[in-house]
Image (cartoon, rainbow, N blue to C red; front, top):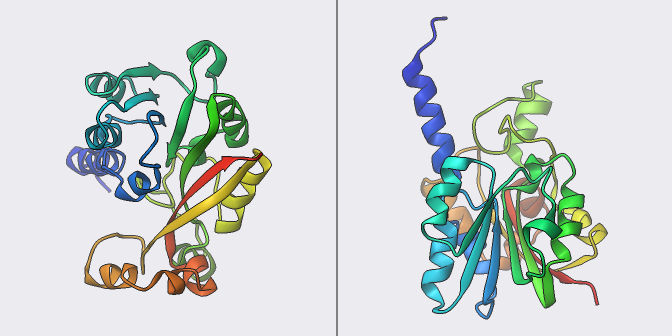
Length: 235
């Protein structure tokens, strides 16, 4: 098969688009009263910009690995640290600085030691502060089809099977990760999908189901494509 540079460029564009969205699911999990927010893996600052725009006087800092995204984010956020989270010294980067909300939107699954990152981050939470974590659900129906029926673990440029993922989480795994990081889950939302792709009338209908149906085990475990959790410091 011949190499098509145009196809590769399109894939990278799709991947970049997936990490530069406003993320309304994450936005809704951030407490309205949060005044000092850290967006870990802030990409180009799109989420941070929306968080700042809705609350006058709110400050949003960011951490970003990609230097191009970090430069763009720095134009809109209050402070951006360009760093590899696997190597970041939090005490040095944020000496004496604390936040009342720290956001990890599609970040922890890319790390070698996600719990170590959470434990370091919680040292920079103010009393009564929280973390907001978004993770893909590896138990989603599309994963069952690919692995158990198709017999293969795909490698893709986006979604559950993003080739840059180092860790995979089910709903219960996500809760355990936070619990073992001395954080107590206080709220959860789920983005439901029938398949690997978002959008479309069927997915919109699925997400309009009542919240009680979302929490029904088969729906929660197999149709939740993305899990979003808010967790507070354990007293």
